[in-house]
Each structure stands twice: as C-alpha cells, then as structure tokens.
Length: 472
Ligand code: SF4
Image 1 (cartoon, rainbow, N blue to C red):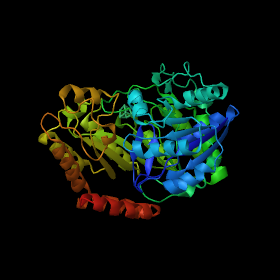
Image 2: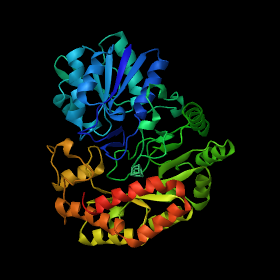
Image 3: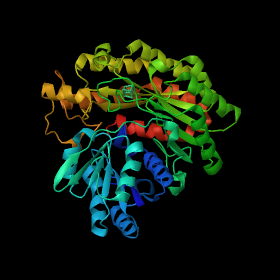
C-alpha cells in the first residue's frame, strides 16, 4: 500500500510536539517526528511505500500543505494530532478528504480513552490508533491492503455503517529492538530541529526505551510496560546517525533513560571507546542516578539531565504518588550539578492538596536548590490518569470539560484551597523566584565560563527566562 504520513503544520506559527507522553504546543522546540519515522520503517519492512509531509518541521502552512498533499499518490494517510491542537490537526484529514478517498487515520496517545469522542468530533477521521502504534500501525495497514474489514485489528477505533466501533486493546511490542532504524531519509534536514533554542545542529531525538512502571497520578505514561532496546541496538542507531548525518546533539526522549544502570553504562562506555563525539541529554528520576553513573554519562557527552521534581512539599509529592522525597530531589540536583551536568527540573503547581503553604515550600525549594533550568507547569488532568479521576470526583472538572483546554501553562482546575487563577499565579512566582535570582545567574554564568561551547544556548535560554520572569 502507498501510505502518506503527516506531521501537521505548526499551530498558529507555534511548533507542536506530537510524541506520545509529550503531545503539546512547544514554541521553543522543533523536534523531528520520530514516531512517524519509526512507523515508516516498520511499514517499509512489510513492503509498503511511504512518504512524509513534515509540515511542522519544515514550517509549511496549510495552503502549501494542501498543494503538497494534492500532488501525493497514496492509499491511506496517517496524521498525528494532540489534544490542544485537535481541530487544527484535523484540518489535515479534511484536506485529504477533499482530494482523495484514502482512509484517514489519526494517532494520539493522550486521548486514547476518548476514542468515541474523537471520532464523533472529527468527522473526516476514519480510524483512530489509540495506542501501541509500533504494533497497531503495521497490522492496520496490512489489513487495509486486504480490504475494509477491521474488526480484529486491536488498538483502533473506527467507523462502520454509521457506528463507532472500539476494538480491544493491543499488546505492547514484545521486542523493542525489533523496530528497524527509523526512516531518517524522509527528513529534509536535521538542521531544522532543536530543543529549547537553536543550537547543536544537526540534532535529533531518539527513543532507547519507552514506558514507565511508576505510577505518578498526573502522568499519561504511568504504569505502562517498560520497553527497552538493548545497548547494542541503541549504539547501532547512534553510529548510523553519526556516519550518515554527522549528528551532533541527541535528546534521548525516553521517560526514564537511566532505569537500567548497566544498559546505560554499556552505552556510555561504547560512546567513549568509539569516540562517537555526540552531545546528548536525557530524562531521568532523582532515584535513578548516582555520582558514578553521572560521571560516566558526562564523559560520554551528556550535557543535561531532566528530572521531574514536581514540588518542594513532601505532602504534595506523596499525594502524587511520586515515590521520592524532597531531600532526595535536592541531593540529586546538587549531584547532577557537581558532575558538571546541567540539571533541568520540572515542577507542577496545582496537584491535589496544593495550598499557599505548599506553593511557598516549592518556591523555597527552588531558591535553595537552584536547578540550572526549570520548567513550571500546572497540573493537567489528562484522561486516563488518576488525577483525572480525582478531579472528576472532586468536581474540579466534569466529563464535559473540553480536552482541547488541556494545557500545561494554564490551569483549568482548582484544588481544595486554591483557585485556578492562584495556581497560574504560583507558576509566575516560580519563574520570578529562579529567573530573577542573582545566585542563579552567577551559577549559570560560571557554568558557561567553564563550558564556552554553551554560550549560544545559554544566552538564548537567558533571554527566554527573562521574558518568562516578566510575564511574556
Ligand atoms: S516517573 Fe512518573 S512522571 Fe515520570 S514517566 Fe514515570 S510515571 Fe510518568
């Protein structure tokens, strides 16, 4: 079958990340559509032909997108979408319907529990891949190649005789090593991509594992099977990226890259032995790093570790089932900085139990620990999470709450003691507490003096930080 893959245009000129746990508008980062490239390589292996319209990365707006799409020859189209850009992304399905009778297929992880609503609201979407795209997409396309009967394709919802049918869940992929190297050849250039601010190109993201066995109440990845690639498979892809595209910077997009210390040690040792010369960063948890590992990571080119701290209040962290302690977080931030690695930390305001005292505790924590960089979000009740259930039980949202309003920078719900406006305000206070803090500036200027390569990134980050601190 000929399959067209679509990463839709930027949302009102702002770049969008359409990658499973991270399906958000992110105006400061343009990431390659890694999961679509994985899908492309899986489909090619089954003998299908694929093409890609990478409108987000290439900054193609809808009028030009339509011209491109109308020139494509395809028998099915797969479109990525996110909750807050839903109507925007679904324009791609409507445009496809104008030019072709190929089935339109959507993929979005965050709204997997809302399949019926999605198909009710997106009239031009025929099939919704709810989850486990690595398994479901090849199955679905193979089946479509044989005919319209879809009743036994696990993991999808679709229309049949005016009805919406939701099939059984699919099983996660058994062997994550089994995915071929993503079809990177479909990208125009790796120089289009960057995280946070333009730097370190050619740049890409990459999954070395996916899923997380932890059960944080706000996370759409909670309690999912941890699917990890072997060090061998990860290194094969790193070599490929280096040899074919001279990649300079990689963001390992795994939820928790360091979950298996031995695997990370093998990867880092080989990067050093083979002089792969890449700069990279990853996500981790404060309880899955230690100084020995951090030093090995640093030696292998790791420049930043991102950790979810969420709150400086033990009460809030406990209630969120994060299973870490405030002091563990403080120690981890210091340890990362001591290893010469930047500590990027994310915080969430407005989790259950949040009040003015706990906000103050978090602000104090931020001032005390001074992470190199910080991201401050509001609690977002994503469907399928425990937080969503709590918010419904407490009446903070209703079943009619529009999923399009699920944003991480604007609260849609209150807590027992704080209004949504007060939660938004807490976020602003956090920006000021860190980004206007003289000690934070001194610490980071010192880092740049020791790491002059970082000047470009750091200066752009500093401008963004000041804008946030002054409410822009
Ligand atoms: S540790 Fe918690 S927040 Fe991080 S991916 Fe796992 S469940 Fe999600």
